Length: 407
Image 1 (cartoon, rainbow, N blue to C red):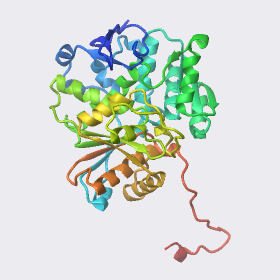
Image 2 (image 1 turned 45 degrees about the vertical axis):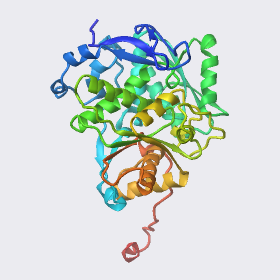
Image 3 (image 1 turned 180 degrees about the vertical axis):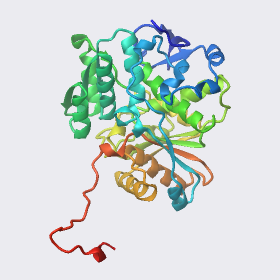
Image 4 (image 1 turned 90 degrees about the vertical axis):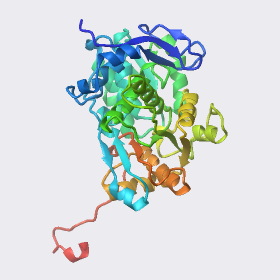
């Protein structure tokens, strides 16, 4: 069996630092906190160079030394491209701020950045002998898990709030998952998964309840640093539900500095939420390291409608350590930002991605972002998955066409 170079030494409790064995199936630590993958970074740094990457395919598996897979045969691929960083010069000119860059994660398999985390989680599940996986989802994560599980030959169960967008529900089912709708929020669906573990024999793949989705999302930080010439933006606006990607990027930057590929500069990390579901923002405003579950959560940006985040303290630590902040925006601001970006720079954002633009605009106005900061916004999924306003004028081809009326 072919091996992939990996430098994993152990897993570590994100709260206490206690070590756990790496090459065995693990969920949460004994204190109920997420486990983090740790590496021999000295050996990792000696094994690969920036120049080595130039000869590899433009996919996130190019960072294989930074990832935990040991056997190449267990890598589950569905075409994980490096996603483009798109400039938005007309928006920048209109808003009067610094450079605006949009990382368009909608180019990934299943149309969202959830593919990163689930590609790793499912690949590691395959390596560790898992036969059945289950997760709660607001849509895109479930679609990614369904696709990767089907590719890996692993049975999958996905539980969605009953108001999850139908395009996501149908995508999940069509990709092969046993798909269920429940009259509650994502954390209620998570309870169904947790309580069913013993009877159903599935592995709980809920956000941060296994160590490897963070490693997949970490590739966002590795990738954007490489794309920016081994530099980082001044500030990152990240749509934050469970926050795995924000946590993963923060981990990536630390590992890159440890092997000498970047310096000590860090982007200011901004957690973006909707006013109808903003537990991280509330905790940030109150100076707390932990958040309280949000009651009556609601927002059109379903991907960030997460009433309680298991990794809240890691999100808030990254925000604090980077001199960033947490900010919430209204749904009407999200809709307006989506339309503005599409009609100004031709970039179709998903609602969660549009939330980052709305947050950037608000932060620029308030002075939380300076006019010379280079900002990177995450568009976490393709806007094509979401409903759009009805449009289109009618032409009666049985009548003379009035071109003057089109002007």
